[in-house]
Image (cartoon, rainbow, N blue to C red; front, side, top):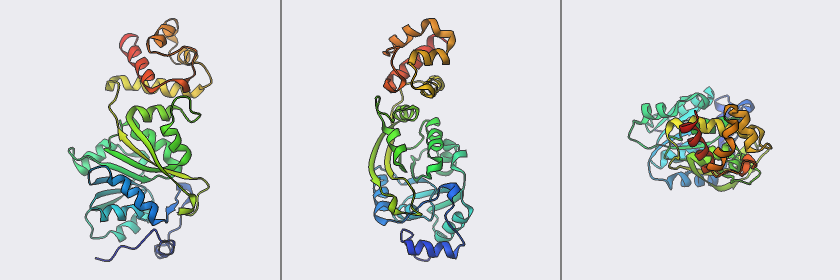
Length: 290
């Protein structure tokens, strides 16, 4: 079994790409991590959460995959680029702990994938140097499935990381902030310079840790919660009352009382409202006014 190369070395990475006739693809937002220190910090953040099963999204040339393998993980690496899948399968040939599949991460049923690959009893962690072009849709997809992971350590565009952990009143607070806070406890761990990637992106990055939190609503109540949260932030400059009239016009005459009962000032803006207040409003409407 051959020794695994140091794919965080720019020279080694370029040689591998030349050997496999590869080049970074802009349409998929490919920026490869070429800094061993940052890779180790991400792996250490994941290791701080117990468990040795992980799904990696967009493994690229395997900078993180290699560290997970060395740390004794069972890894399922999902990569959309056929050329990179071939490269990774070549690098990890004979190492049963690592499975590489050509998969579009935006088309995955996460709970079904976890059950099929890891079984129903194993808690699985998620790790990714997430391509920025899919970060928003990808985050919504894992939240839509109630965040089925023991933890996630994700490298994101700094702006997106800030949105995930933004609090009411912050300029970055929006629908993604509310939904992320509803399903997870989030913490930005550290910033990452654009200089540690090849090719170099135009924006800075940040690594964030997400852990699941107890949900406030019953499963049946959550679709209405999503409808309200995503709907009111489409016109965030309007008051919550006017937004709710637009979303649920049949409840117009009751809305002031419903908002007040939920602890929400009817003239407040969406970015001023706490996650718990959105949940309470959804619960009251779902159970009494559907």
